[in-house]
Length: 246
Image 1: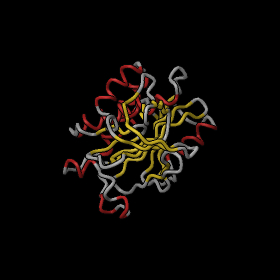
Image 2: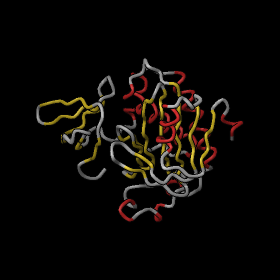
Image 3: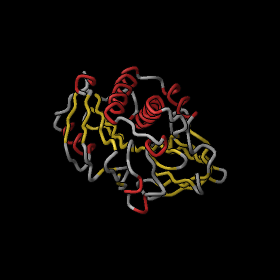
Image 4: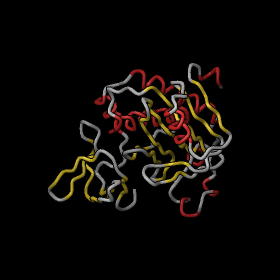
């Protein structure tokens, strides 16, 4: 695998609390090569946006991809580019083409979460944390999660080689970030697969402010446009929930 991933460096840990937490600590000490992957076989305290957590088990691919930050790219554009790359790679590897992007950091299939991302910029590094349910047995998940998540094996009815998925994701990330496509190009692809556009949603942020309204889509800066009454809100980050079923 190391040979297949060159020039990307792998930092392998059999068990970690969170790959993003470890990658961020290494970034602050300037101990990361770039590009690199912080990878674990068992993540026990995965982090999501804000105070959210990410549950994982056997069959989950949990990794953080690290790159030198492109400071010409605003940090809030990174999840858009990463989401497009991950969705495209999943489609290429598995043939599952109907995975949707749920702004700002999730991928869903038929309303169920198959992948989550956590993007952070730390000490000159861009960190893209990925939790992808590849061969996860959904019935082993905590009861409250079972109706909310899925895995590629459940969707396709067959196992996917997780090593090949990792290699494909790492290669696509490295090429995609180095090519640095325009935001207009990214948004064009994103909007083709955007789950929230045209739906009633509720958005909350770290200040515990909550807005509900109709999702128009994304503006030219990648912000979510929410129509609440007669007012348009352009939201740069937050936790989004659909009102009603997907």
